Amino acid sequence: MNKVVSAAATKVSQRIVAFDLLRGFFLTVVIIDHVELFPSGFDFISGRGQLWVSAAEGFFFLSGLLVGMIYRKKIAQGMLFVFKKLWSRALLLYVCSISLTLLFTVWALWHGNAEEIKYAAATHMGWDVVADTLQLEYVYGWSDFLSYYVTFMVAAPFIIYLLKKRLWWLVLMVMAYIWTKRGINFTQAWQVLFFGGMLAGYYWRTLQEWVAGWREQAKKIAFRTIVTAGVVTVTVSYLNLFVLDNLHNHLAQLPSWLSTFVWHWDHINEQLWVYFDKFTLRPGRIYMFLLWFTAAFLLVNRYSSRIPKKVAWVLNLFGQNSLYVYGMHSILVFIVHAYLPKTAGLVFNFLVTALILAIMVEITYLKVKFQKSGGMRHPRGYLAKVLPAFRFEGR
Image (tube, rainbow, N blue to C red; front, side, top):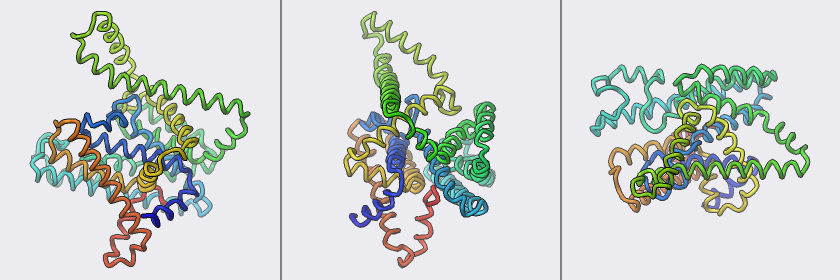
């Protein structure tokens, strides 16, 4: 394992470590939430995907940010190269998306869970579903993000071209216009995160130079203000989920004054959620995401060296192999939902969730070790053409 870690460390040294750590954390939270065995203890880390902002937004944003950052450097090789690379990634994502959807659909039918499929009845299955899957109109399973990434990656080189021409303002206008017309369309809503991330990544060095020009006192005030606001709002969101819900469930047993307080608190929380809808990405959720992500980046960027080495290693492992982790986790999660009971105790939930995370760490490590050992010379060398392909960022 040491050889693999040292080789990975050399590569990480040329990267922004905080991004890999954050993306690894977001993926870990996504896995926990998709396993969805609560309470498990892990839900206090993930927030069950029910906080004002979820890990999914951070994962989308970071994916776009890295595309913008990486492909700004690749512009020197020509826009034709950029188009080919990004569209080849889109093709890979497309193949992964439709393959997993068809796999899970057939699996669900075979297992007898056809009612879980997003069609009115099993009679709708057949070639219609195949056609809908090929058109990305039908997605089933826990890898649905891949279908959205296909659309984003097809559009990405056009965004890079506009940014190259310094038409960032046009990109912002188009993003904003599409968002205002989103209705209940997930792709039109969440494109703000991906393409907004691309903007941030493309101008990352410019942003760094701008902040570097601030006075030290201004930097300290900005850091403390953003981190404090982030910690306070995260705390409130956690209280809403874990404390308010619990109090609401025992409302009849509470003293009258506390019952009244909980009622008002619950009413205010319901009013706030109108502005934090996840599917349509309402304004409150966008603003809160920007605050939480910025605070998280500032903290991780400053204190990354204090993260326990084993934890940092796992987060880096996941962060640097994000598409592979995302694709493989969907298979394990499907198994959990298909074959394990959904109502079990805390210990059972904890053990299953921990086991899924441990399996993901092991198979991802083995995949990296296989690559580092020169997999093309392996007797089953064709696998080396498949496994390394599960790398979204185009490195």
